[in-house]
Length: 124
Image 1 (cartoon, rainbow, N blue to C red):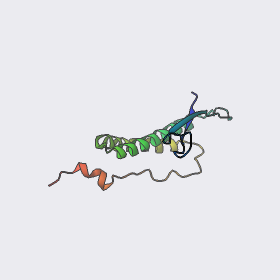
Image 2 (cartoon, helix red, strand yellow):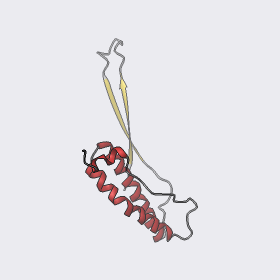
Image 3 (cartoon, rainbow, N blue to C red):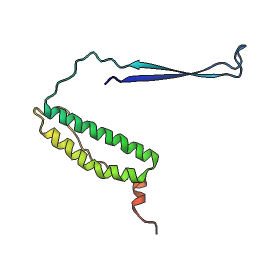
């Protein structure tokens, strides 16, 4: 799978210039392919599973941020119910690694914010 990066530049012409009529806006986009020079890593199965679990947790956290930004409470609630299982999977996969990574995993706990959990309680 080849991925690429898109860079867009917004250019506005000067409205006071002799040839410009009202300051036109031009957007130019350039596509840059991402080229990697390192060979594909061949990981042991336990490290690959730990990497996939970490990727899943990262993707879930990104989805949580998007659900919070959209104020989609149902989606946010469903993702928060899924998160402890994903975090437990990452812990379990990481414990099987030999040797253990030098960087500690830390706490993977995430709590509801009061403003976000307000929909769980009925107003009196």
